[in-house]
Length: 287
Image 1 (cartoon, rainbow, N blue to C red):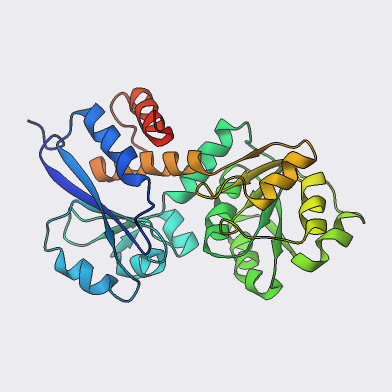
Image 2: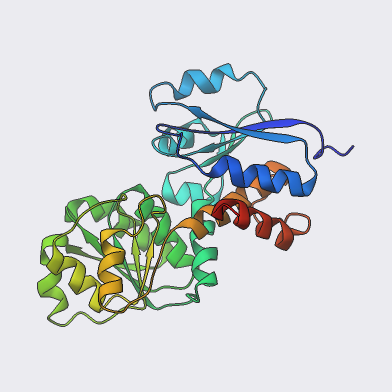
């Protein structure tokens, strides 16, 4: 038995966590790879994270972290990869060494799935929302070669960190207030090839805003996958546009997590990775 085939336990933490699809796709990958690994879920609040992490006492190989734990996981990591450092968010902790190592696989997951949808090197793009997910989305766009991003935010001041991040990675970031979108779209703003929505599922926007975004927004890539179609996706469909959800991002970031859990390297492919990804995709879709 190899070191990878030996029994190991992994978990996803968050609050809430019962809805997570991660256990089914991780378990499918481990079974296909022949690894005696288990993957559970644990409800952990932001306030309880430190005590829970201290209490695992070497019993876990690694953790996946979701809302609201990515910032506290960042603080808990002794070392971090480049994407984690850029975003201030850690969604993966490797616990096999002397101290936790932190990674952000959301960036790579978004970029890989966008490539699967034919988006690679779009010079202009739009991000709707200015929260934590928007940070990973911006870095992913930078990885794809995007040069100019317009951020649509309810509160433009919330997007200031994105402007600063854009300067770090060589992407120009402009901000438009949500309530000014309709008039801005009817003026001189050009169309974009991609609109990436980071809004929580079910977020309702004024109809004139959704219509204006849809008419000049190219492909809608909505990171939501539990509330589909979203109001934005409905607007896209209404004008004959194409909208896709974030299931592919979930899959691709999980692939990178498993690489990390196996070797500590998010870029090191898994054995027979094409086959493994196919098995994970079928598990995700419920086949």
